[in-house]
Length: 120
Image (cartoon, rainbow, N blue to C red):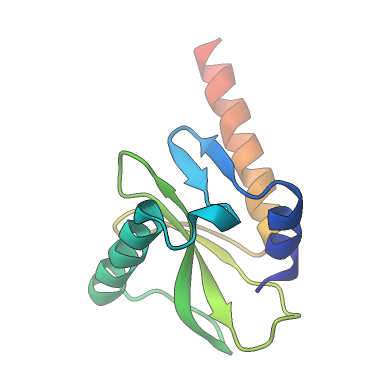
């Protein structure tokens, strides 16, 4: 598991509504209905769209999902656990790609700020 994501799980253990209705899964969510639905959606997306995983990466692991839409946040499963993993935002295809978990998290903060500014 990506070291930054593992650290996030140790401290926050998930984050409901990290962006609108997109939740980051906590350790208690793995194996839940929401997680299983996210895994199935990832399989469907993988069958329909080519998603670059990078060298040394295999399957995509959901780390978050929308409660009402098709948005899924995935992390490529790594062969080498010390290497940072990208976070890929999918919604039918690739929406955004972040080099690291911390870059992703800063991106979510920026998205929330932009939405708040738009409402002001």
